[in-house]
Image (cartoon, rainbow, N blue to C red; front, side, top):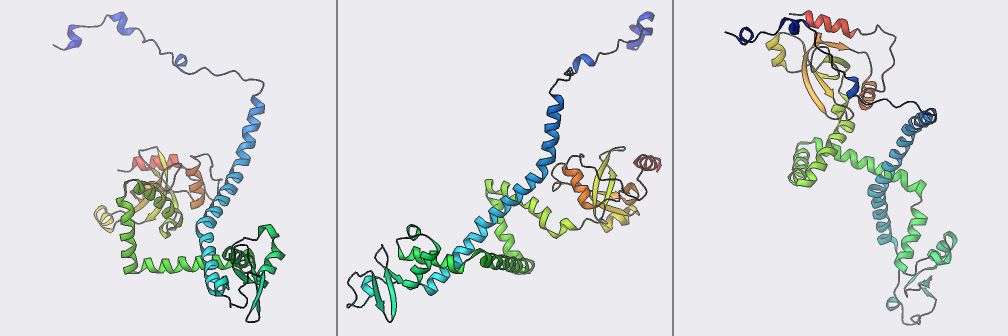
Amino acid sequence: MSHDDTNPLPESQARSPKPELDVERFLPKKRPPGPLDPFWKAVWSGAATVLPPLLTVVIIIWVAATVDAYIFSPLKKGIQNAIFMATADIRSPQSLPASVRNGAPEVVVGGKTFVRMRGGKYIPRDVIEYLREQVSEDEIPAQAAEAYLLYIELRYLKPHLVLPFLIALLILVLYLLGKLVTARMGRLAWSQFEALFVRLPFVRSIYGAVKQVSDFLLAQRSMEFSRVVAVEWPGRGIWSIGLVTSESFHQLRQKTGRSILSVFIPTSPAPMTGFTVNVPEEDTVDLGISIDQAIQFIVSCGVVVPPPSSSQPVDLVTASTTHNEEP
């Protein structure tokens, strides 16, 4: 005998409706509007307006400062040292002829006038005269080598001359590096170099995250998305934004007898991470928006919605019903 037969409920209890749960008392109570609410709303609106361009400028300045500190400055310093080693004419008192080795402030050697620095060594007078034209007397270094380096920087390494040269040099180095890593031996050597970072416990985590971001922003495969589609994922009636990457595996198309697309589903707010699904082409809906618009939508967690296009709008409800009716 079943439990329902042995312990029947009273007829009045069985027919009486169950009491409804008061959900409102579990929810936080809404605060009544205050007199300063319009003021703070305007403040937040102003912050939302100013913050995007401000952060854009800050990021650009940070990137420029980082490139200057870790790329341009070392290159400039190396060029400065190379010019110094090739052109510097510094004479110590011991190297001077005995006839002029008397500690005089100026000496003439081989028809060229040298000026004695506070450090004791001599440099050409035209170097000192140029420094005096550019900086004050107190800013001229006491040591001959430092004064010569300052002279090279002020005369030969002017920003409007050296900056285009450094940019061209950096582009050339990146080009040669790109050609090297695409070659077989270069790719093998680079993979061995990357393996060193992967073996280090702490560095491995940082390198992996940085590589994901750089690959998404700079690698060629980040530009191979053909179009933006909507996919019912992870379930029916739940639409996710996807980026079509390819026509998937040939074996999968052959086994199923259907046209299969490989769709990358980026995650918010970091679109460089996500997962790839293989979806029948008829189960995808072409949204008709650009890749940039889709990325903005994902990064903003759905806040920045692309404007409606002039083409026929996509009816996701009809598409979902059609997919559900398919056998």
